[in-house]
Image (cartoon, rainbow, N blue to C red; front, side, top):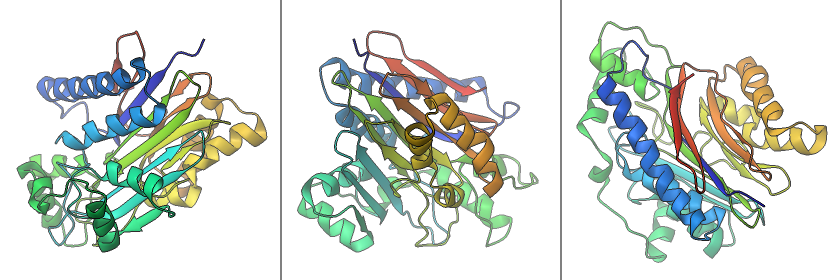
Length: 322
């Protein structure tokens, strides 16, 4: 009997143990549990893996603690550019949006692209127009802004106009302006993977990008095969990390390929990509993945990764550090 399961991440890297307060750690862990309960409820009520990852990522987009949706980081022009993708493991249908600025929940737009268009990826103004035509909620760009994210931008810019900072790296700089940059600290993406009671897999990802990034930059999050992938023949994967490296490695699909063509288990394949292949490309980060038997893998090669999983009927399990 298949045990439906959901796994999520809120970004690899992490605020260092020395810097995080017990209150802040509790806030992150509570948020992860809340998202898991919301997504798992969909599975418990007989919903599909696709519906479960959609809801989980939507909830992550609504939480200002994570770099997606409300709480997204700023570009160097003090704007927000959001990306998202989703994939159905049963049909391998997929959809994505990139560089959107007014769509409240980019993951819903990605799903609309998948289900209501003949295409896979819409960007910028075309994605905005498509979302509006589908009746999705659009907001003023200021909706995505938070004081903490604006201070992160200021901190990054104080180090030099070209400093591009990965999420909680910027939080550390805001707290300690003398701290050196270490771009492996935190990669701001959210993602979810799920297996439903019918044996179908799905994956979804969303991000606000990089603090102080060049406008127009797109990372791995909306690139199917790099940041997001799902196939019932192998697994569902949602990655988080230095997007350029994950694109070069075609990281999400590589795990599925290692399983299908080399016969590796989910654990073996995901560890090979995270600990052997990505480091060769300066690829700091991690991922969450689930296979058709319900095995979950959540490897990361950074100090931590905001992550959790829940099997239907059981309590959610969350963690940040190793």
